[in-house]
Amino acid sequence: MKIVLVTMPWALLDVPSLAVGILRRSAQQALPDAEVTVVHGNLDYVDWLLERREFTLAQFNLLALDSYFSGLGDWVFSSALYPDDDPEPRIKQMSEELPLSDKDRDMAIELHCSAPQFITELAARIIALEPDLVGFTSTFQQNTASLATARAIKRAAPSVRTVFGGANCDGPQGAALHRNFDFVDYVVRGEGEHAFPALLKELTKDTPDPEALAAIPGLCLRDGGTVRATSMNTKPLRPADIVSPDYEGYFERLEASKARDWVEPKLVVEGSRGCWWGEKHHCTFCGLNGSFMEFRSKSPEAFYDEVVGQVERHQVLDMYVVDNILDMKYLSTVLPRLERSGYDLRLQFEIKSNLRREQLATLYRAGLVNVQPGIESLSSRVLKLMDKGVTGCLNVRMLRDAETVGLSVSWNYLYGFPGERPEDYLPLIAQFPALHHLAPMEGVARIVTERFSPNFDRPEFGFQPLRPDAQYRRNYNLPESELLDLGYLFTGPHRGIEDPTSDLLKAAGDRWQEEHVHSRLSGVDLDDRIVLVSRRKDFDWTTMTLEDPYEVAVFRLLDQPHSTASLLRKLGGDTSVTRLEALLSDWLRLGLVFTDDEQWVHVVPTATNQELLRFERIFDTRRKGTTDDEPEPEPSLAG
Image (tube, rainbow, N blue to C red):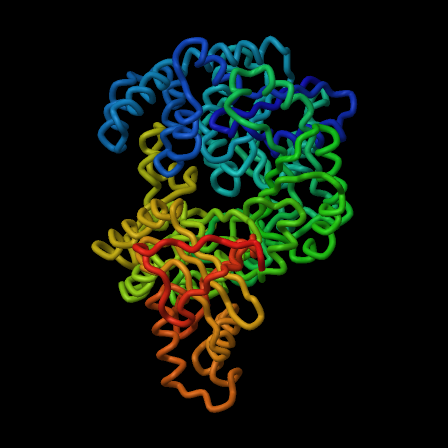
């Protein structure tokens, strides 16, 4: 049996497809004599374009990443999915609905017009491989390109079977895709490690048994003129059944591509599926994990062996870990072993934002360089509305401690939650300048409604009636009733804050991004005093020393979030509420602390080069410091 697996635009260029890697290994394990070929259609497309026009990585990323919520990448290939349509109405609709620069709009239109030619040529090359079956994985904006290629293959070689799977095929989406596009023979919904090999084994028979096919969980198939969709699995895969991917050929294909100078290749590994937090507290806006939220993780030994095995096989040290959340037991098992492995790994991981500094340090020592902690907000009340299980002060602590240990942080500020109010935002916006030295959010955005999220499933959250996002009407010639099943993103009534509060939040987020490059705040604890250094535009001091034992004690306690009541209990003695509140108010004015929901935490990362902070000249010790107009002290290494 000859099998071709295809990953289409707009899959990222710098990583192999995890889904294709898993399916390739699954196919080889099920049919050892099968010939399995991977076609990297995303790289093929870049090379095809660069032979014909100027095209840049920034333009690729616009279509692959930046336009996800508008579906522009899928729109480019809609012309190839519907090659007999007059292109002008679709071009006019896109031009009127999407706020693009003239340059980006012209580029998208040119790609839209040439897409049918690329798809025709790619389909011909795939057919020349004489496949019995062609499988497509579709996630994010891969749908129209994959469908267009499957259409072209089926029209030119009707005997070739076509199979779809991936996140865009989960649940109702896969059934809708199958029934609306008759050139798709099969769709595998949900996890494919068992269903795809079972399908392959049945298709090796001269006459596949329709009833045997219908017994494969999650499979959509055509039985004569009848479209059938079997029930999906009710239980997720066991951890031991989650297959390690086979990336053979990807790195060689990237090296041969014109895109090799654009990106540094990275590996993709998977330690777990599901979300242990979401099992009990499903974040209201999150549609990740689709059909299976149940958290499952590979054994520490298996995951360690997979990571090291991929590194040794491909000689690549950069690595994405695609888990939705870190398995906490890996902190004491896998990560210390990776630290001792001798490999200078550079990992990226998603974590929960309440990890403590020592846990973040463990991540850093193991090779993590970037984390996605799912911060989403700095308001405890809004975080509670999301069911996030953290507070605003814990999120700030995370940003501060990540800065201390050397981890970069990727996060977004989301708004639009039912029940939120302007007062959940305005006091925090006023405090943003004190945080300009910490990792800024990548963007500020109103939430969209995602399939599989509580906001989608539960009418009481107030997002009904829902409509498929406008991108689906631009990209598909299907009725609204079918788009309701095919789509992943939906629009409904706005909830939460509106203008001008949302405008203020966006402006404050933009300013944080702008000022971050020039902003610094750090401190060092020298036992009897704490030395602080600040370079932030909104604060007129640059050096400060805390020497009063009371102030030092309060500052040390604020390493963790505390209420004034808990601070008073821990300080003991004759401490008065008035004195403590005056100190906290002063520190708030100086940008040393963050407060939300009656909790306080300091925002000063620990200096990473302590010797440079041991100044010979110690400035005013309590509330005053040097101003921007005064000369900055020269550092001394004398101690």
